[in-house]
Length: 307
Image (cartoon, rainbow, N blue to C red; front, side):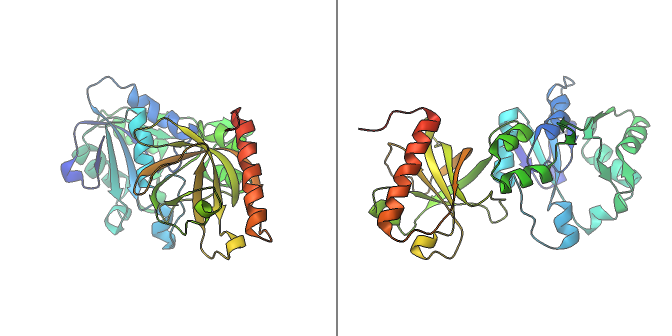
């Protein structure tokens, strides 16, 4: 998949799904699927914004369900051919809806087909609606499809609902809203190796600072390692109060597996919440609890206990 932040280097013409797409949840997929099904020969393209518009206006770092690398991996797996990250800056913000269509959509993207969500807004002060986009692009013979809002129960699927589910450690609801398991992508870096000293070596993940983390605690996970099959394990998210930790860490222990993972990228899929993080009176008590957590994970994944 080609990834561009400059419109000077993009592949054209394009069939585009247009939006923020943080999380790439089931609602977003309804916007992207028509582009994947387009058979006009145009490049199947997702057009998003960097930084997220809310971050631009609030000037505060926004925690993302899918930081750039994660979003790229998901879109590539879907079959998207090109991801364009439009710089969300003063020049873009001041464009009127008509200017946005003339300059960006028509002239630079050379769009042949557009797909947006029902709640899509564009142009200065969000003046343009999805219906405005349909009307204005029809004048220059670009068909635009509006995807209806996807719902779960009585409520629409949204990134904010997914965040709330993650903070409640409700992974079943999270999976329903996303259409997949929530994941964390990171690179294994050196840690304090306390886990190894008590018989449970862990991979300490360096993850993007903007990554939205779920409730702190211990999870059953499956882990993708490049060049290996998906492996079961447990993951701890927290500050490790038993060893007087200060910073939040994400550490993964793989069941019945030992090897060198330093500098390798892992994709960790969250399957089940085991317990909240807690402080234990000793390393002996912590070790016993980690063993119990491993047993819980084995039961969850229906694995035989290692001999």
